Image (tube, rainbow, N blue to C red; front, side, top):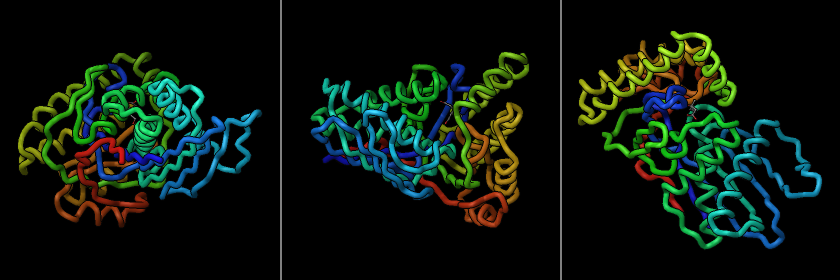
Length: 330
Ligand code: MEV
């Protein structure tokens, strides 16, 4: 039996634009998915998922008709089956054991589909744990690469390497196409607001893609996000003093405005962004695909967290430390 964990992430800058080759800077945060895997001899796969945000459920498949035989919301079932299935397939491939079966237990304190990289963390941890259970220790970069292939497949070819690379490596990273690097970054005072909802990444990415194809100014908006990321990158290289936090915040506000123009924000995300700004945050933006889910703000004082916890749109507000460790196999 092997257990592996991997962190979720927030986007400091660059979601959506990263899909079109612009750079992005996601940062891993201390909310983790933990996956325990045990090989079974009958070649079947049993997934037991416990997410702190949802009711747990168990799915056993590999049956003749593929019917999992349980009543769970379709989206959750898809999350469990498609991502875990793909991850297990990658582990089988890495170990040269195509028929291997597993009991997989997933525990996560990362809300599903809320912009904090829950699926990437589950996929990264599952690949690392299942490969280790088959006797193969994978380098985090290989885990990231294999996890990216799973996301690409599940999200119909609409995924960048950003979420999976960040979860596998930990810390702050920079992703531009296939060029993935770790960054030296100071600890940043992240505050997260969660509206309790989730967005459909595939649909939101497709929406931006069609806007970008239809309007030159939408394509310019995507390119402008890339400019914001490049500006943010040079500030991030500093020591995280008050002036650089203020500048990062300003750029986050800018990024949110561009994402809003691309139609991926929502009333609740905007309300949380404004609650954070009015509480004195350096800046605030949605994180991840958008539609619903989470915003991230920068504030070293307790004000933003308090304001968010009183905001009508916010179901949960919490601080999140930068997770320095990516995937960990124990
Ligand atoms: C989703 O977490 C981030 C997007 O940029 C999609 C991706 O990078 O795969 C919207």
